Image (cartoon, rainbow, N blue to C red; front, side):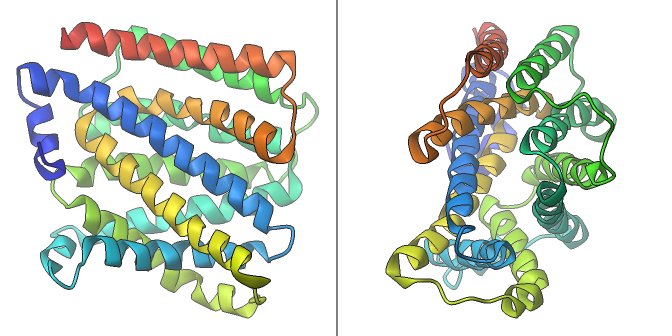
Length: 303
């Protein structure tokens, strides 16, 4: 089954179509792994290079690697779309998520920004009904709420007064939720390669003035390699993200993004030596349990 026909078959009846949401769940988990590795790489690079430079190179290498991988010069029809307006809006939503999240972490604790960003599944699930016609049932809403509680156990956001910069995190979360919904909407008609390249190209052009203005030469092949790797992890993650939304409804996939916190804890320990606390392990277990319940429900439906 090709990626381009997968979305159509997922809407039909029978074994392959009913199993499609399970495949979509697997793809979204892998996408979250790519995003987590991207964050870890960017964090490592930010000790020696400007963050905005890293963001710009991430999108540039994303575009270059995508063009080479899909050999667009041989298949220019991959970039064909009748919905340029939605494509450009989606690209700016992706860029907006990155920029506002960067602004937020300048002023807020990581736990606070993470907690707000993980509110996105609520927004996606709530809007998927009126926007996409994909309504979530009571069981799925319960799983989403339980997963979010697990995230709160891990992040333990402060109970003091809110900093004014919380608006940056709210903006980043809103952009991401809109990006996810537009991805699902466009996946029904546009090619996965085209969506990947267009979003990266728009972000690259928009970020070029800022990226060039803060440019600092990387220190040797190691840093150059890591910079290019950000595009591979970012582009690869979003390609998997697109394929997942071609196979499964947004309310099914939204709560699975909570699994990213498990990847983040694991990478923090392996790369930066951040030892998880008991509350971190407990919260991560709740998140995994919530995701496994959704996977179980989809398997029941597929059977």
